[in-house]
Image (cartoon, rainbow, N blue to C red):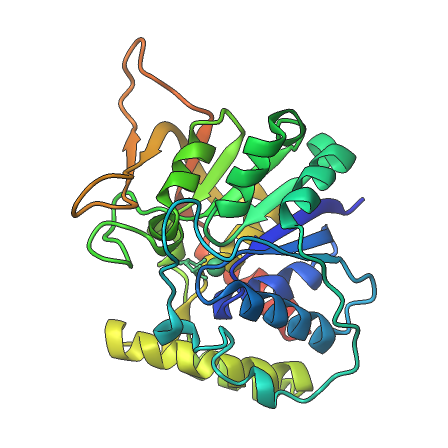
Length: 315
Ligand code: RIB
Ligand code: CA
């Protein structure tokens, strides 16, 4: 029986790959996709989600709901230099128009609350952007949010440098207050940090090889919208490719055994001058240590992940 999931996304390039993996995985049933400002403005995120749904010709279209256009208490900090101004490598406008209904509404928070109430412990919320929508849903209806099964959140950096300044990961940097609220809520959260996602660099030549081996509109489109994301990594990290941050969160929703986790008390710096968004984990085993219900992924089964990713993406 497929597991019901809700995906909350700041639909950038790796988010788009994560959506494709989710919709091509029979283990999951995507009931709703909610958008949140992050990589780019929220309307771009919504349009990117609709473009991916149309590209995939998803038979059972999920509810699409647009959410927060800015973090809870801060101005939006976005990443057009990574994902393009439109969030999809600046190619969305030129993608082959695939017939589809561009239906969405504007109440992501209500969608998250209703999904938690409807699917309860069966529901996995896959959060692959800043946690603004989830924090607002928790504030509005904490009882409903406690009905959800688990939250898999791509975010944080524990034993590796940040990717947004020296110590912070982007999603938790953009809205540290939202991350702090969720991590201290008692909700069952698994964090998928840079510690594991930066072990999953896919190289451009591999994408090109696989896309040419199984040519299709989807394959051609993947090559197009990942180009800019990969050139950014070439410039900043020295390799022509890209980290598959968000697809790993989807893989963990499919099967938690893709990663090894450790339980810890984790919090997020909200007032540091140099440390905004930094995740601080107390892994010490001390009697009486504060503990929230957070698991942190610190190891990933790379080979198994790439078998899943490529096996599903290029079907
Ligand atoms: O730090 C990487 C995360 O920030 C990914 O989710 C990426 O899409 C951006 O949202
Ligand atoms: Ca994202």
